Length: 90
Image (cartoon, rainbow, N blue to C red; front, side):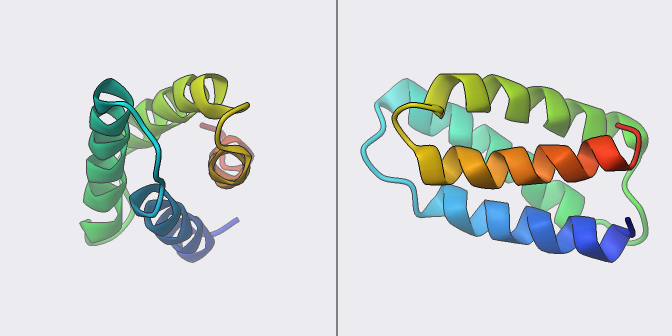
């Protein structure tokens, strides 16, 4: 798994998160924070530090648990990103 594939997956997840509707204010704020962290990872030159990806992985796990029932398409994208992060040892 290379950094390009991970970046592509994070870009797709970023787009999916931005298109998510029907969220309460707290959920929207949490997703905006996750979107910001994904954007930071995507904007970096070269590979992102492992610690940053670990933080993204933790946030994705939390968001998957929270939105699995209410937003299945969103959680599918998050699970895919999490699988890729796991594949690179994070």
